[in-house]
Image (cartoon, rainbow over all chains, first blue to last red; front, side, top):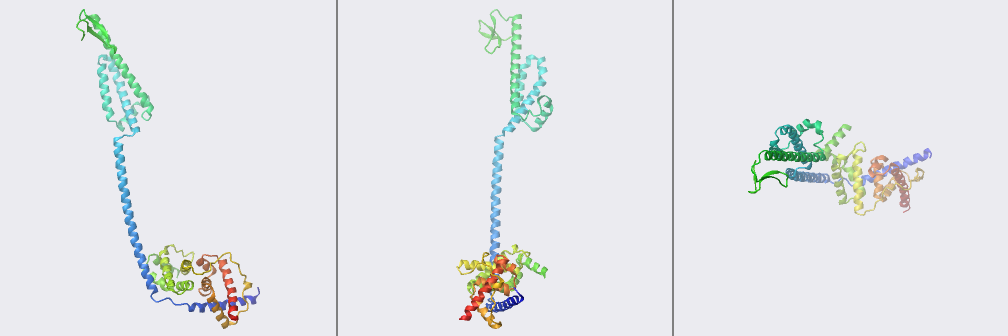
Length: 227
Length: 182
C-alpha cells in the first residue's frame, strides 16, 4: 500500500467521520423529564432494597432465635439423659475406684483380723457395708488419691481398663470366700474343742449341716445347744 | 481530575443523590444516543434508558476503573441492555462474530464521490445499515472510542472490531453505488 492509498483511506475516513457526525446530530435529544423519572425510579428501587434488607434482617433474627431455642432444648434434653443414664466409661471408672479403695481397706484390715479371728464375721459385714456406701459417692479426687497410693502395685492404668476391673472384682470375691471359709473353720474348731472338753449332756452330739457349719444338737430334744 | 473522578465514583457508591443526578446529566445523552440508535425512538428506548441507569447504580460497586472508564462502562451496559431488549422483542440485529470474514484495507472503496456529495451519500448509506453497525460507526467515528474500548463495550475482540469496521466501510461503498444508480 503506497502513500496515495493511505491518504485516500484517511480522506474516506474523514468523509465517513463527517457523515457519522451529521447522522448523530439527527438523533433526538434526551426527552425532558426523563432523568427526573429515572431518579424517581431509583428512589423506588432504593426503598424496595431497604425494605428487602429489613425483611431479611427480621428473617435472620427469627431464624437465629429459633435455632438458639432448638439448641437450648437439645442441650437440656442431653443433660437430662446424662443425669439419668451415666456414661459406661464413667461407670467403669467408678467401679475401679470402689474396688481399689476396698482393696486398700482390706489390706489395712488384714493384720487385725489375724489377731482377732473371732471378729471375722463382723469385719466382713462391716466391709460390705462400707463397700455399699462408697459405691454411692465416687469422685475424681478419690480416683486421683487411689492412683497415687497404689500406682506401684496396681499400675496407673488400672482405672482405665475394664479388664483390670473384672480381675479386681474376681480377686475381691476370692478374698470374701477365703474369709468366709476361715470364719467357718475357726467356729467349727471352737465348737469341736468345747464339745470335747465339756460336753453339755449325754444326749448331745456334734452335727455338720449342708453348709459345713458344725453345731451341737440335743438328740432327745432335737434342738441346737448354744455353747 | 483523576482524584475528582474517584470522589465522584465513591459518591455514587455511597448512593448520594447529587452524584446520581450528575451522572445522569453528564452521561445521559451519550447513553440515550446508543439506546435510541439500537432500539429506535420509541417508548421502549426510554424504558431501556431507565434500566441502564438503574442497573448501573445497582452494580456501581463492581465498577473497576482500571478496566474501563465510567463512560465506557456505561456504554457497555447500554449496549447489552439494548441487545437484550432487541432479543426479547425479536428485533433484527447483527451479532459481532469473531469468525467473520476479514476485509483487507486494500479492499476499501477507492472511488467515493468528492466531499459534500460523498458525505451526503454516506449519510444516506449509514441510515440503511443495521443498528448494531450504526452503533459501531458511531462509537468509532463520533465517540472516538478505541478498538479496545469498543471491544469491551460489545464484549468482543479488538481485531474483530477492526475487521468489522473495514467490512462496514466496504458495505457503505456498495450502498453508495446502489443509491447513485437510483
